[in-house]
Structure formats: structure tokens, C-alpha cells
Length: 503
Ligand code: ADP
Ligand code: MG
Ligand code: ZN
Image (cartoon, rainbow, N blue to C red; front, side):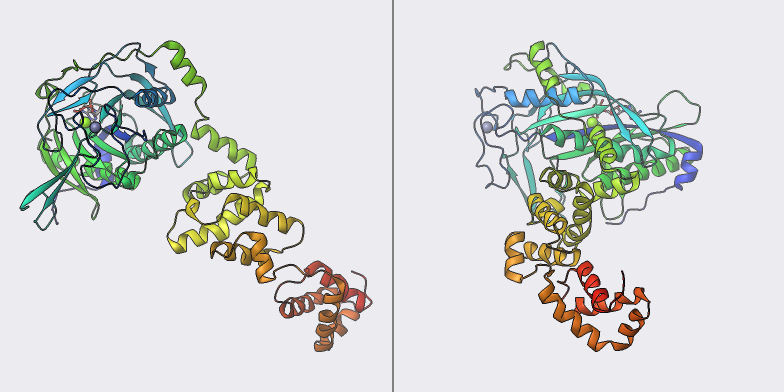
């Protein structure tokens, strides 16, 4: 699809306006069952096999709240430095859409379970930007519509639509920021960094895998501009369901340029939802935004209020894991790496693997070296995530132990890793099968050294004459004949011994 939208350059937009953003992130919880019934939440099952009268909205069916859903919401709230409601209710958000069988979504309205928090995010230059959290509330996902028969998969032009209610009722937590002001030209970067950090927090809490590519986490980007110096906010647009970190940044950037063009030409921004297009990073108009009144919110009469005991909340607070930013900084110091190298490790997704390898006995430098070297390269080449490689941290630790003991040199270690990744077995098995031990026994090495001296008389004479540095060439020759398996240090000693020179 090609859409032409007037844009002004990013620099020009920022020279006239300040962006204000609001980010709404939906997280699908990893609970075994749905939020208000016992149906399974497992992905990838046949359509409509995970449904019951409650999640199909049949008359008379009664919902029951999933305790793990509430617990997860409280954990998220606590991790985001929120207050946790002493008492709150669910609310019905009424609207009609075929993928929502009850004709209302069970959500929370003016009584969210968590509110008034913040999340500190680190920007690329190391600066910390505080994003204030308005609320985190519980709700449920909708079903899924598939529009069939048209060219685009959109409802326009389709001959019919299919509905799958397996997703209807899966617990969602919606996390809404307060208006983010003062980010200036870094607004898109802040948006991306916030969603990235939130994702890390959610994963650390273990309440969801938060895979954006699987729709387990999605972000609505609200954005408005106001002229420099103006207090009041401008009218916002809301770009819906942005599903990658990069897209969050691009959507914010595009909207800044689009809003500026509209405002510069004397136009007004309509409050509407917009669709984001991955192909070119543009957004197009969606629907005119409903007001809260249009949803006719009212407290859900079929569910009791949620009143989490303070002892429970404190217990959950005490059980929170170390927060990702704190952990990252701690590891960076423990490992003695700079910001830039730490960022590479993070980008490679190798932090947990390295930590586990160190826990399995490796020193941190070796653990980092192999994960960021051989293993990262293999992950790259084979298009896998680093933690999906068929080599465990314990196996990597074993390789580092074999190197430390002198049984392997780096070159052989690389071959061992290659063998493990190729499915030849664990490190010891690969060493055994491929015969990869470093040869350091003088008997075996002596013959190879004699051979090298005999084949390189000119070099041997130089060494005899005192040019000890020339020994490197003979070591190289021995390494070649032993296919890299000789203990290089011992070879050097033997050469010097045999030529009667001091090392
Ligand atoms: P809605 O349900 O209509 O999306 P919410 O209050 O749930 O409304 O979310 C709106 C989001 O947009 C919040 O993050 C809020 O802070 C932010 N926001 C509100 N007004 C503006 C504005 N004028 N410009 C940018 N962001 C805004
Ligand atoms: Mg919204
Ligand atoms: Zn159900």
C-alpha cells in the first residue's frame, strides 16, 4: 500500500514543537488458564477448542477471577513502583465487535489494581529518564477474526470472516503511562527504551514471556505536539498495536513529522486511532476515537471486588526479583566490561547464558568470549536466538575447563563447540570422537619437532645463531603437521632445547 502523507523533516518538527507521548502496553499473562474461566491458554490449538460458556459469553455463565492473574498484576504494579489498591473492582467496557462474544470486555476503569508508579529507563547515552506510570489494570483479551476471500486480509473485500475464541478471556495487563513530557527530540528513543525496559521487567517477574513478535506484548503509541512554551497539550493520535521495539520508535517519529505538517499548514489533528505499517514506517487513519462515555463503563456485577490483603502484597514485594536495570549494572561491574560491550552482550541476548556458564564454573572472561564469539556467530548464521542453540551453559563451562587445564587450546575448543552444535554429543564426547586433545607428551611432539627442524634448516640456523624470535616459524610448522593439536608452549621449549639455545 502506498499512502502519501505530508511530512516535515524531523529536525524542523522539533524546532517548532514539543512532543507529548502516552504509551499503553498490553501484556498477555502466561497463566495456564484464562482470566475468568478454567479454559486453557495454550497457543496454537485448533480454533474454538479452548472455550466454555463463560468465555463465549453465553447467558447465565458466571466468571470467577484467576488468582494468579491478580497476583501477576500486583507483581507488575510493585515492580513499577505503584501503589496497590486496597479494594478495586472490574468494570464492563461495552462495545460491539464480533471477536468479543460478550459484547463487553471485562476490564477495570476508575479503580485499577495498581496506580501512580514510575519506571526509570536508561537511554543510549547512559542518561536515566523517568517514565511515570498512571495505572496498571487487569482485563481480558478478545478473540481473533480472520477475514477471508479478499486480497489483503482486511475486512474490506473479504467474502466472509472466521472467528476463533481461543484467545477470548486470556488475561491481559494494560500498563498506561502518564503523559511523557520533556523528552524533546529523544521522544521516540524514550518510547522504545521504555517498552524495552518494561519487557525486561515483565520477563524478570516471570509473569509472561512478553514476546512482541507473538503478540504477547503490544503497544499503543499516543502522541501530540504543542508549540514550544505552550502548557496545554495538543490533540493526540493513537497508533494501535505496534508490535516491535523498532516499530514503537518509528511510529513515534512518523507521527511527530505528520502532526507537524498538519499543524504547520494550519490544520487540526483529529483524535483518532491509527494503523502502523511495518513496510515503510508510516501510519494511516483508523477510527475516530470513542470517548469513555461511549463505552458505558459500569462495575461488573458478576465479580466480587478484589481486595488484596496487605500481608499478601508485602509478601509479593519481598519476593520480587532483582530489577533488570540493577542486575545489568551489577553484572557489568562484576564482569568489568564497559557500557558499549555490555550493550553488545544485551543485544546478542547472551546475558543469561553467560551468567549460567559462570555459575557452572567458568570464569567470566572465558564465558563472555565463547558466547559472544563462536556461539553468537552460529546463532547469527543459523537464524536462532542464542539461548535456543543446542549447547548448554554447562557444556560451554566444560569447554572453558578443558582450555584452562591445557587439554584444549582455543583452536581445538572452537572445533569442540562446532561439534556440540552439530549434534555430535557433549564436549567430552566430541573431544573423544574427533580426537581433539592437545598433544603435550614429549615423545609424540619430539618427532614432529625433529621433522620441522630438518625441513627448515635455514630457520634452525638462525635460531642457533641467537634469533630466538624465529622459533615462531618452527612452532607454526609443528602446529600444521599436528593439525593444531600440539601444545604450542611445549613445542617452543622443545625446539629451543634441541637447538641448544636458552629461551
Ligand atoms: P484511551 O483509553 O482513550 O486510550 P488512556 O487514558 O487509557 O485513554 O490512554 C491515553 C494515553 O495517552 C495515556 O498514556 C495518556 O497519558 C496519554 N495522553 C493523554 N492525553 C495526551 C495528549 N494530549 N498527548 C499525548 N498523550 C496523551
Ligand atoms: Mg488507548
Ligand atoms: Zn472459557
